[in-house]
Every structure is written in C-alpha cells, then in structure tokens.
Length: 294
Image (cartoon, rainbow, N blue to C red; front, side, top):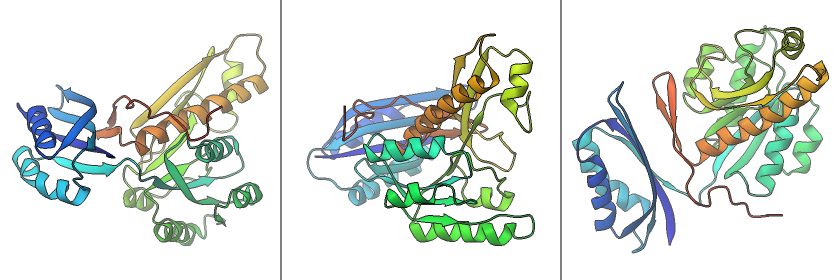
C-alpha cells in the first residue's frame, strides 16, 4: 500500500475535518496519522493527514476528486507521495559542519531528501562532495558579479529539479530577487544571538558578556535578512568555565542538529507558513526511522 499525506491550509470553518475524513474513507484510504491547528488569531486552519491507499487510488485520481472540497472551503491543498524524496541543493562556504552532518544523515536514510547538487563560493569541500557522488559547483560571488553568480546558482537549481535550497552556513547574502523566486523554499541556519551580537565573532562577543545559553535558529529566507519565519530552534547551556572556543564548538553542534530537524520537517510537509510565523506539526510514527540503523 502506498503511503501518502495531504496538507491543507484554509480559513477556519465547521466541518473541514469531517469532510476530509469522509473523502479519504470513500476513496479507499485509511488515515494513519493526523494533526491540525486552528489559529484563533488569524482565523486560519492547518492540517496534515497521513494515510495509506488501500484500494490503489493514485495521486492524480485523488487530486481530481478532491477539487470540489478545495472550492467549498477555499483551500490550499496538496497530496504528497511519502516515498518520493525531496530534491535539495545545499549551499556552503568555509564552515562545513552542517554540510558534513547532512551528507551523513542522507547517506544513512535519516533525512528523506536527495542532495542533487552542492554549491559553494570556495573549493574547500569539493572532494567530500564528489566522493559522495554529488555534483559540486564552485560559483564565486563578488559585488561586481553578484547578479551573474545568482543566475548561475538558479540555473543549477532549475537544471537539477531541486525543490529546496539549504544554506548550510553559506556566508553570502541572497538578493531580494532570488528570495522572491523561491518563497518558502530556502532554509537558513545561524546562531541565535541575533540581534544582540551582530557581525564578526558572535561567540566571542557572547563569551565577553557571560552568556549562559548558546542556541541556533533555522528559518525560511526572506528579503529581510535573518528575519524569515522560524522553523526550528534549540539551545545548549554554557558556564563561566567554558572558553570562547568551547562556545564555538557547542554552537557548531547545535547548528547542525537544528538545521537537520528543520529540513526533516520541511521534507515531510510538516511546516505551514502562517504570516511571519510557521505552524510545525509533529512527525508521523516512523518518520525518524533510517535505512541504516546502528
């Protein structure tokens, strides 16, 4: 039996859950997991339903039959095949901890994505990427060539058929035009000291101020630098006994974990944009299982 999921966003109204459940049952589908959220502030309703097609109904048939409900409730809705891995382009500069973590998670099947290309403005990780049988593209970026460089980046994205761009510590600011081309489809990671400690050496700045919590934030990229809708965050405690290099090491680990969790949520269609925020529903059973355990 094929595992699918349905994602729905629409204005809140009575009968939505009943209508969706009835539709799936009438089309030979059995619900295996369901999450929903009704935002009382915005009047918006969000729902993700995982189900198996027990009588062989395919995506095309389900989508066509679901159209009247979309019209009735003014929905934005999509059916997804859970077996189909999302295609991802990863972008990186000279800090490789997030890239290396993603390569490992993908290799063992812990992330339901296919990295179809890695783009960097440096050559540092060419060998690691090529050894993983992934195309590597070095695209230098300067003030003078930025439009041409971004056009080259978008060509890689389009040619590879990527659904998502991941900025795995890519230390270049994307233009407003590029952000607008991929709304809700570019994920970034950075430390959580903003806006307190900006610029160079934020961990040293945090150490000098005696910070006791180090964190990371993963969010969708928008034209407003580092202010896009937040997907995932986490923290780790530090004490007066830690050094600035300890801060950096601990921060590096939490960045890798937070980015991986954000990608996992996005790839499983668990993230809904809700204005300047997100709704992130819990993972379905077995969503964290990997092909190579141990």
